[in-house]
Length: 267
Image (cartoon, rainbow, N blue to C red; front, side, top):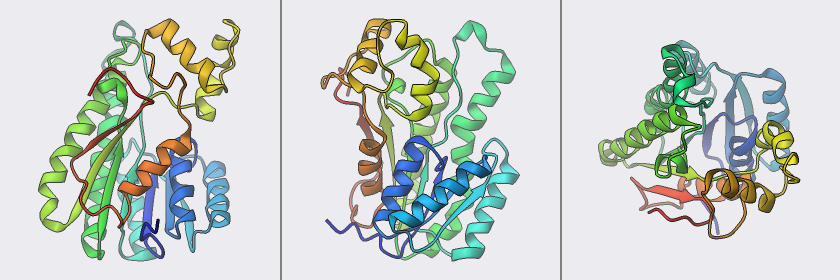
């Protein structure tokens, strides 16, 4: 299927690692020019090389502090100067986690700065370029926890719920411009950072944090939130649906909140 991405321009925030990198690589493989935004220079340089190898006609890694509005604006200004217009914006940034009793006001503020306001600021900065393009799409990444609550990630979930609401609202206000706006809600996804953070915890239960079946076993045992397929997901499984929604081929899906979670008991 030709997604109509050849020669288009895309930005992926948080695109240097994990799901963001998988999305950026998929866009590149479809022939899009791709800019990835994140903080770490080494990871950005590695991602840029990977995108060029995947087939991107142009790729750039832009160092951006997604908790800082001025830094975000400067990052998108660099895209403006490089390409002039933008077809696809995929926003993947999320905050840390914690239980309610453990979090003070500063930590709540930080969670919303990354989980909600980074998306608001990125979309606002990108809009002039999206409007200048022949076609444009916006996709945000939220989380299935906005519908299936987990006390361990209360501020993360609240900030992602706010981002989902903003996304839905923008799908209405930007429809007149022909800009399609959608939200993807990943379930439990086995990324490198997930494995690194939880490998010792799962190992204590005799489980492998790189094994999607073992990961879902641990999720079910500890949080009682299984999925119908009986395994966790992989970054490329988020990338495929996100890339479609961010593509020209998607001509009629807007305002959707798409669960990519292996099947669950919510709608």
